[in-house]
Image (tube, rainbow, N blue to C red; front, side, top):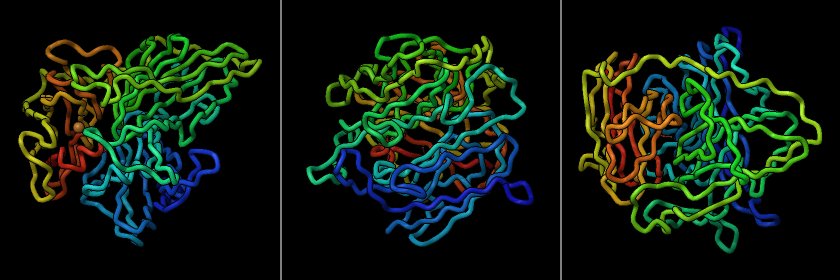
Length: 427
Ligand code: C2O
Ligand code: CU
């Protein structure tokens, strides 16, 4: 924190080397290191300033995924940073505590930049929020876990060749480590799960099928903990879960077969794939943890009944409403202060998802039915089963700027790069 109270960070995108497989050097990219990036953390109400340096041989950008902020600070394709150049975004954190993340968003090149390793967590805290018994000691009982998949060529370099969805890798890592384990020293541990993959959807659960408590979605805490055995996340989505451990035990966090909906050729879309992700190893003695409170937060009211505008977004192949992304075209113009319903449909027989910059939306309904409890919180990204209608309600509070657009897109990053993206301005 500098003299005027601004929380400052520096991030340098650079080339590096990672051994995903022992003894095999894989060229990767990272922020301030060989792979991934440091966890950034700020409080609600704080002014944040980041110095982003690009030491890569090509332009990149850094997008603050899930953050409510002015479009000019958003880090999308309109804020690319040339090789050797520096970008200095600044904004005030104005949203509830949440597990957000940052990653590159250069025009047409996002998949490769994320796949090479550029991504990190951005955690938001709210000092005013009441204590609801969630573990909160970073790295001890409160642990961010980014899950990614890759394929390697025989020579150890990254295999960039994918199919309809992009790359579905068989080398699955937690925080960049294959076969990772976490020493657990407390009765309960909170995992902040991020699907940082470019294409794959995971259905996380514990190998012995015990229940965990899901306590948060993309944009912050759920109203109440949701006991569950599966937490499914498509690319870009986050969830926080609290796991209760017994002394001395070992339990594996796995990804089970995801429920992708009525897709064709499921085996080619990862529908049959299962992976071990992380082994939780409890110490012989565990320090006591508080009970998770039965009520976690009160969500700000956001109802489809208050919407004054309804927009439709049909995703098909690489187009939204029949159009591919065009940097020079603004697709939607939103009035500042408006509450809107966005009706989103996947017209293909394969997976897509949908991410909206700047806002956290609520799922009003899916094919007219209320969302399941695990989707009843603040979201910025949602999986789209084929041929269902997702009605998302969102409010565009402030940050009007007629000149700089925000993005909405499929977060399967190959699809995004190939045009499944559009732009909106808030005026
Ligand atoms: Cu996480 Cu427009 O992206
Ligand atoms: Cu897609």
